[in-house]
Length: 433
View (cartoon, rainbow, N blue to C red):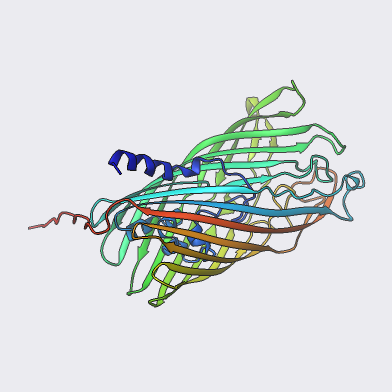
């Protein structure tokens, strides 16, 4: 394969995430954790310490120094959520006859692409293209909670080039800028009657941030990774108006900040065939607060009361090298949602959950391997109580039970472009006399 055609193929893999990714969020609030079929097999345990191979750079860019040569990975996750909201006693009498939401979850395919290139024995460059945030919830057009939400859509794209340095045998560091596109569309009924027109709010923006990370190898067989993704400020520009044909739309702006995130991973080789992984993740969802939607002349049109708590994710996993070609994985995780009953909405009825995952890799040859993973998410029983004093309350109480679960199937492909038998040139030695 010529260098030009290889470069074009590399770009195609790295930009895989430019495919539209929509669906229910599955990393607390409206984040998407499904960035790696490999790491998913562990329920993302050790994601920051390299359990996801190159795709671990989403959580910790310093892991690119663990991949000698020139690599690319492509991943795709099919997310199948099931979320139903069933109104109960306490809901306003004018709303209750409109009935339940039906399944508001929407199936989705979330892609991600990664590439890295080793320049010498100290320096690497890499590129990731991902969708860190996404959400589509779509209840029936006429339902008991329609004045609080009809459809909701969040879409994002993030491009993240990084530079990694292997300082010595036990320490590597990396850093790089993030360019993020963020788009949101929210709909709700203008009245609690069947067929009522929708009020539609939409806006988008491009924002900037960075990622940074470090990997430590204090002992043979032990890897510790710490990764950080910065918050990104967005000044959304769009409009708000009615779905009625020809109705005027008001231009608006809204400041929204996506959260920063800290991920810690530990991977420990137990035997030549067995490695265990652990992970911890903190997401600073409390930075969202309540964005104000501002119209012409600086007049506040409405607000978006979010006020999330911070999110936490704890995971354990292991892999077993069955043969030279097959590696098996398993993992469990517990996720503390940033959303509780005090702020739970009909748009995003999130709750605490348990992740149970299985995965496998098949090494086709020294250059090519494939990954597959399956996860079932057990969501904790939750309820919605939009009553007087709750942040979404607009004069009509809405009380409901939420029944939710999710299945995720992910596949990945990893390819090494260069010849593994050819050594990478050493970095120049600089002497000080």
